[in-house]
Length: 286
Image 1 (cartoon, rainbow, N blue to C red):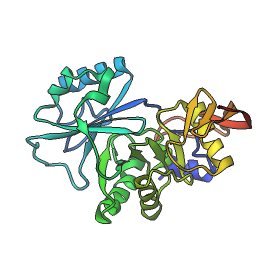
Image 2: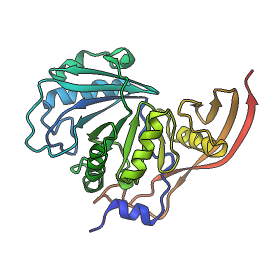
Image 3: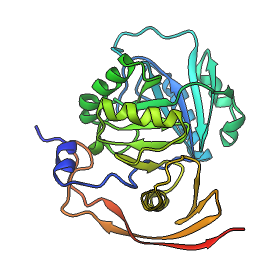
């Protein structure tokens, strides 16, 4: 059986700067089976899903469904749904009786929705086999191991992008994404996040930045050894440290050869790859 993960790994395709870009996330609990486009192909009311997808798109928010780890085909609908809103370094949480309530939220101001979340880092593992079989084949066992190992708040989620890097995981509140994980390394990532640190091995980038910005962030971290999640901020490809140091990072886009399928069953393509060609410290803010 040909799988996109196998092809990607055989080509040693780099993980850096491949995270889905999302300044904000809205994650809605929805047990039961998910279709490829889960917001309109699940036990969630399709009309609610379509409208939520529309409103989120207009607000620049990435919306996804989440569910507890385990078997879900015949789950009963919960009386209350857990909802998480997240952005760079913050998470807020709420419960709703009906997901349609979310249509009244101001999705452009999610930081004011719900209550501050103060628990363990959130581990979101993509397990949607209807979207890509690799996510089910590799994501579900990872989620199960993490949940059994008391890794904290572990959820299955519908789509994080980058099926060919399965299993993939997003860690909130900092929004760093990871790929090609095993349970041991995923636990290391979550333990670091609990302390406000980033693990660079297997890191795809910080979702709050676009792909050139992700490349710049990771390049400066590799250069300096800085692992504190909030020590760096990125504007374009300019990276600023909290201590005042500033770097300009040169990032060019290359087509990754040879062609490969980005998803199981998809036609081979040449994905865009971010390549760092230079990192220069340009100033120190006073």
